[in-house]
Length: 377
Image (cartoon, rainbow, N blue to C red; front, side, top):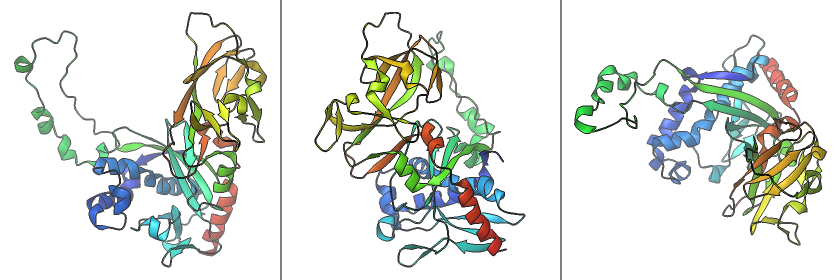
């Protein structure tokens, strides 16, 4: 079964109803603090809550069919309304149903309590274009961590809007009279509105990137305490400058050491300053740089280090993350950062390309779920 599935309107109806209800009732509900904090209207709230959609899709379309054994097995997602600051956060999967019989994984007794012997599962979702993934430890120790990736259409809300809004009559009313408003448009800098395409009914795709544990994720990732920013190598581009780059900063191997996962961690040589507590600084800011992968560390020479990139020369064919580098070519490794100088909590960061380095716990989770299905058939 493919780890990527198409998401249709039927897959998201419950999530859409739940988010719409949160939006409409946000001034008079326990969750109002979480909703009002940014002062968003409905579109903004949908963008912030859209990540509840993958919880049901990943389990119902990818994971549970592997262990259903001809039974009707569905995930039970948390659609309760509560203030997590008061009662804690329920895991994303609060249970499953087997032939319409609900099997809870947690129960509420003034706060959320795990059911003994049942798996505790969190689902973390990241967008397709995200290079970096992160996790805040909200009581996630000893929980499974299901990592998913969304690739939704930029207009994902279009299929949810009544088709009457997109009628030809409405479209025709958008017509602008060029004879009245346009004197000259030789460069075609202005145009009439186009018709909305309502033929496509899916909102995009969701992929299962991996199943591990929260502890494993935190062990392999880079922990940034409150106020510590994070930077990472975002992309590789061939250096197109026709000007020669004189000199050399040194070999990349002198700036890092290999970890037990095969990733490379930058050492103190990379930073501007390291204080007595081991805190690293660049440009007068507390910062940590994410571990990265290169297939041949000895092949990389650093010609220049800039704030937004490093310029390297490759002495042998090798791979940087998922990009093939060719011998004798010069590349720019683009550096991006996330400013967390004002943050108040700790967070764990990892390059998305490092997810395959995480210990795969899919078989263990499937075994746990299969046993539950077998016992409740």
